[in-house]
Image (cartoon, rainbow, N blue to C red):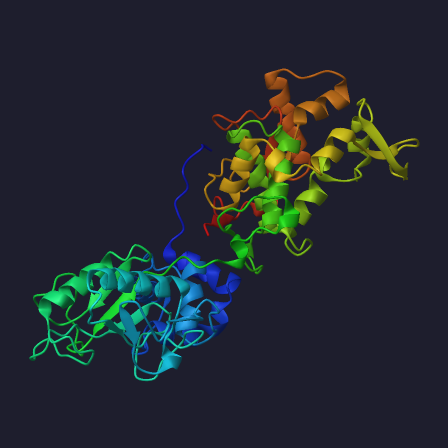
Length: 469
């Protein structure tokens, strides 16, 4: 087993996971209708293809994955949910512009309104005597379908009148008298250079105007589509109480079996970093740190999802440095030999021998209270990479780890040599129906040794995956 870069999940595999974790799988018929209402034959590959096409039309990265950003826009475009961001109404008039048509169709995203106002202000500065730009339909409040349009659903599409040569603020056709090609070209240039929101495309049929595309039905207006801003997602917002600074959205854990995918939270990120400090010291970002995190991701994904509602709750129960009071009497007896041991509670009962005092080391009590910004940078870095899908897995499907070197010392009162340690490790694993993963280049297992449960032997290598956000 080597430290290799893992093959990325395919778009179809990521979609199958996101269908559950984002909830759009329960509305698949509506999703397909929104992507392409004319398509009748659907499978995983068709969903990737149509998602990619929709993303390209919308101005999103066309990867075919219906992930958090794409779903945030598609659900609005499909009319499934309103978007409160589409609530900025373009004023009826202002420097350099007027808004024509029904006022209830002049709602947009704030960025779109700012882009239009910036364009109009530049136009006004250059041409204070007019004519003004004629903005027409944008979207309805909250977005969604608009009668008479296949687009205008996301607060990003704006219809604009071509500029007339006679100064009138009235309709114009590009191929009829009254139309000014030079002024319309200037308008197109100013839209592209608005400085607020990039233009995705402009549809207009004058073949001599640069920066536009020809499209049926666009002789008498310019259809401008701005690129969508990345929406703020609840998963990307970090609650102040967690102590974690704001970061990008976290990834999603997927594993074979019936358990649904699990979306990581800021609390998961915080406790993963604390876990790394407790288990590895947290001062390095190497193979050992990746190994212990992946053993925990594997264990949670394959074995304990049904017992713990969150990844951080699992970490806090499993990892002895994260337990307020140590659960295991053997671990407690070892901890009690340290000068910073703090007695908490009473004594362990059978099967523990008499006199084993419950408690925890003070260093771990302090660790459990340490805020994000005071945790080592290496631990924070590994935690972020692990929970956003950027950390390679060096231990396969290992779900168990522990220091067999320490276990040897506990039994024999001395530390083993290399060959002696390896024989002891293999016997230790066999006694628990585990298999030692064997030597891994770059991974020192004298501190933490990694094992795969024999019942997991039939799984594909690296069965648990973390989808990027």
